[in-house]
Image (cartoon, rainbow, N blue to C red; front, side, top):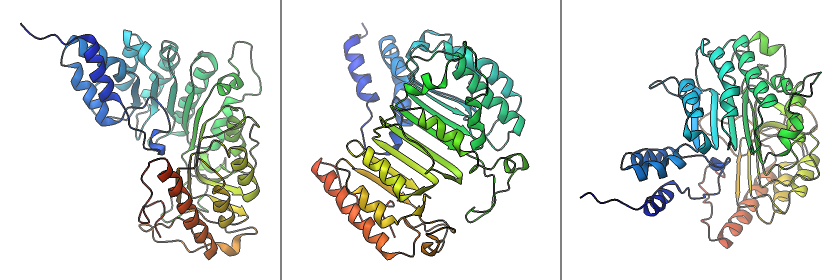
Length: 395
């Protein structure tokens, strides 16, 4: 007679396999995400027995990926997404990644536009939504269709438990579709959706200018060049301004975006902040850090340009954060124009990046002082300190 493992034991084993150790990094920016090795383990457990299948499925279907171009094998990802949304597993889905991955075909765009809203409506427990509306193989018309698909879905599909949103749009102008000139009583106000968010990540993926590009130049499409990212950054920043309850914010861009124009809600108290390719002033950064002083734990800065003040001043300010335990800085410096132009450092070799690109030696003094401060906080919590050779600090 075959041994039947009790349901309770199956649940304990599966829970152990599905447990993600917290490493205090941005890899876990969004909750409910499954690492590839954990996903593989859950898939294997589903084959053991019916009890294991039931227990593992509750975890496996928490996080589903249905991005066009995310895989070259198996069924059409949109077909799989539609099937899951109509199955008993739909209630388990907490984290959804859809839209376009690294590549895609234009003929898929109509399927995506037609399926997105009805499929989302069936995911009654959805917590995190990631959507990609850009890839190199798409035309500007196809990009527009994908963007309108997600905009319409968020306008008309009620997602009462949504707490995390990540959007990859080609240019900053595209975020303006969330704010039409005219609205109707049937549309869900963006304010209502954004008010419930804890995690927000907004990415601009296409260049609109050749000026300011580093190393190899990327061709700029005429349709993108006509709508410069820096001139339309306000659309993207408005989404952030309407999300007063954020705990984690991630802004990234291709062209440098002016970030000092944003007006944060007084209620905002971030625990995680990630900025890539933005232009900011010391005063604005100081105000944000001071506002989130009692909550910030994780900060990641990449290609951030400081328009006024010095990086020494910024890094010294960060030492006022009592809970800061994870800090990363990469290729940050000063803009080529403005009051800090004389501090612009030489562009390092492409394969040998610097944490700071600066002519101000004091900036590096601030970096090492901050590293010692962060390491002291980590040691106090029983965490391993960062080594001098760690890439986030390396010179």
